Length: 288
Image (cartoon, rainbow, N blue to C red; front, side, top):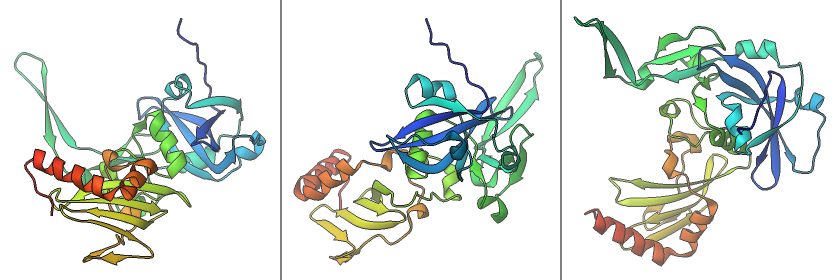
């Protein structure tokens, strides 16, 4: 028999973040404009796993972000669990939250002689076609997003529970989102992020270790050379340590790697170079 799950607006949940911390959030609304999904507000403070903060204090904390999600999936997969409830759901602030989402297709519906509608999807530039809305209010097409929206907008898709936990931990979603071409990812303080990305038609491979917004270590892989850069050694063989902020590039989901993968590469440069040469030959490419 399926597990019966009852959730109510005002419920407070706790999610484990990494191996040492936990974070709290509250179910504050259902959004009729986004599949009637649950809207949550995630609180900023992270606690040790042993801490038992007063929930009255928790709901007065600063808000880290708002999001749409499916509470049931997170409960069933042990991503979070209910710890209590509060009638304080921050209604005043909730009304001010502005969600936004891009559209990748223009939908044209036409009637046909047989009486059935014909639906045509025409590709469009997502960044020229934004929709914004407040919870349960009709979405508004705004075209290009103006600067006044960029600073305040919350991404509006319904995020699965792993994405919610990612943002709690890192301060950003790791998913591939076109919206991040405009709205830049901003990590939480003292957060490590690891990236593996190919450049110049996949002829150069870079491993990047960010702390907050800044790269502190980098590996550049070429066909006959592996260059290891750091703050103490920012230049070598004509290559310089990556100097753009973390949010400068719209990283794709499969470009995020673990610390273990980064340091395996860092400690084994010769093995790394051989693997990349083999990969390039298999794809008919040649690394520089």
